[in-house]
Length: 155
Ligand code: FES
Image (cartoon, rainbow, N blue to C red; front, side, top):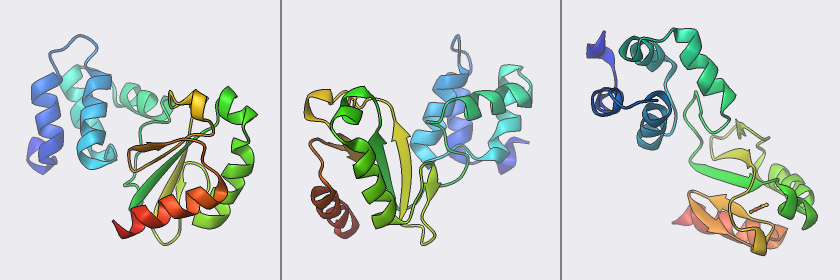
């Protein structure tokens, strides 16, 4: 069973499975390493933690943070929580969708951008907030978003 597992999955299981409540730390470790939680890892995770596959799938699908497929080359996380709502994040979201061709929790057809909705990036004083490839940006206007994405694409 473990021979076909990605080394990152094997490592997460061996290092973390003894923790109390190990499922979430294991899923985070795998996604941090691979960018997603491969569906083929689910049986091994379930076996290691003495859970059912449905238990593991249930947690992966409950938390929108977890992806079941590889993300695009760039991950855009757009905050839609209260402060960012008040500062126009929905108009920004429309712009981002048009600019990238990606809908929320989907990847653009060219594989360039995965767009995710998040609910507070801890940057409320600088709303609307956007994270691009793990870098946090505040007071993001459509024009600024275009510039930031261009910078990410060329870096
Ligand atoms: S509400 Fe958007 S960063 Fe807090």
